[in-house]
Length: 116
Image 1 (tube, rainbow, N blue to C red):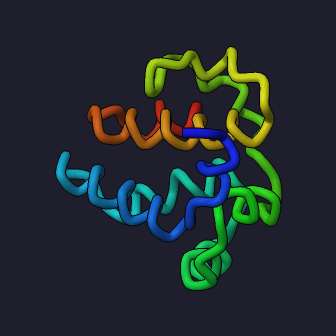
Image 2 (spheres, rainbow, N blue to C red):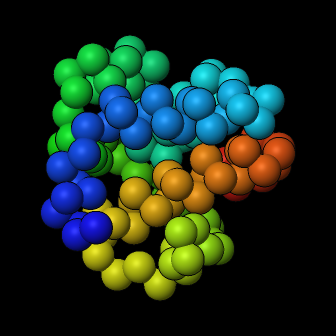
Image 3 (cartoon, rainbow, N blue to C red):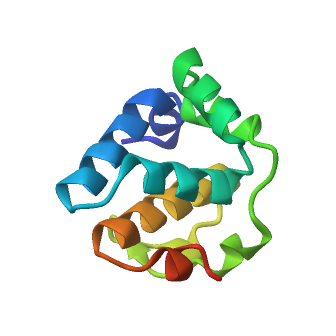
């Protein structure tokens, strides 16, 4: 899958997949929201607005208030790719979010996921 194709995917569809993954593992939609808000700086209302607008991933991250300064502490492998080695800025943000949701599904505590 090319980067442009990934960037064009609707955030709302990806969001639903994140929620389903979390809930299958006994975690909650609220925890998914907390992770997304921590990473992107969206308020709960602004996040809901993004979901309803059906913006693509590129627009979702472009309109984000700001990436959390501690996001650089996110390390590890997701989809066979080491997150800290991803050079393209938008793809790095997407992989950060994927990694955080993976950590949630694997049962990590929210304090560790949010690098506190």
